[in-house]
Length: 391
Image (cartoon, rainbow, N blue to C red):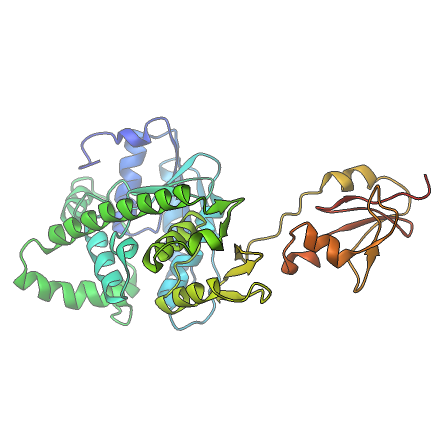
């Protein structure tokens, strides 16, 4: 969509979810989407409870949707008191929107040209690389669906004109004038001064973001080529020996690409160097690098990537389904120095040795479920059945 005069072909026959803040940008997008896709639209409002006016904004969004007969959902967000409240609010908001999104739905947000220019400058001042300077993509996978920014090629002046011509009402976020927030400081102080010297600054920054986006695709293609040629990935793990055949900058490129595929937070330069150091650690060291909620571990020349906040898979395995209705059934976990007897074996073995031979990483072993009937171990998750001497 280059303007508001025609339908957006990407949204044809799609189930649309609008992130509605109540500000002018999202209200304009709501009006446009309701005009062209009235039966395929619902709205979600996130209440951060950061302003004394939050309840008023929530009521405004609810009433606006009710007047247009648009299904409406409110999400209450409780924020921890941290130094970077702006970034924390953004992360939690998108996490909440992701969880709310159903399969194949399209989350639309009202980012526009000026937002894109501000994002590029923010990323530049943070010292970001190509991925950061590529700024916001128009669309990307998100939760069970897609995150789409239909107004990304539209300037703020066009949005203001649309709102005026259609006699729209919206709320004004008082925090938008608070220069303690970096984006506001850029918008209100820095960008106006730059525009006085550099004509068409926003379009120039958008052009730079486009160049960086193209460069990002190139280096991601290189990562894919290196991964395939050197057979680096197997079962979502990276082979250390295969990685070590490459130059360090190509190793880092592969790591960044793999982390982006996993939707992990991009590590800092310091953390990336720790990752490179981990590659040459002793094989029996079981080394670990962590950043935020994420971990990279090495075990038997394989790199494992772990999101510590992701809920463990609670699906019941086939052994559970087999024994769950048997009398005296129980689930237990391994004990120190425990021994087990596998089918076809004449003697018991150390459970530790069995787990090692099965290639199960040390940090996963204590969580493996062991299925007992009375006091007899009958099966173990990821290992299989035990010798049943009673048969």
